[in-house]
Image (cartoon, rainbow, N blue to C red; front, side):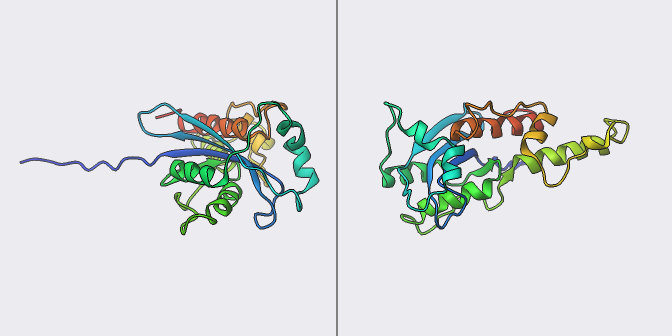
Length: 204
């Protein structure tokens, strides 16, 4: 008698972040997109894409936060060709699970790019993973398991609504991005990866 075990391979993970000209996916554009692709048994692959945005409807506050004008003036800055970026990005994200800080926002911004070239603008798994929600669940699980005697030492240690991604990041031992790294797509994607790894036990 033989016994066969069918082990379903885990899908690739894509730690993502976008820097945009605002918060409305119908009016604003993603101008910087970072993806850290993780496939089982392989080294993480980092990719960053740059798309020149339409600034007509840009939110000045958004451009201030992500330092758009400061960053794009550097000598080595190069914008990608939209169709090439869409093609390469689509290949990276097809069939992945998206992970990030508020990934539905990033998913919508990226889907707007894909919608110009593909019939299926969201090729990733429909259930994205938000690191703040993941970290909050982890902290509640610690309390329920008795890791703190069945409770947290101080009431303020409980995750508070609305969730603070930075506060929860520190609660699981990951320092959020420094000021010069925060609100850069790759810096925030790396941070999302680090929080995910802190909660799940690292790359597997």
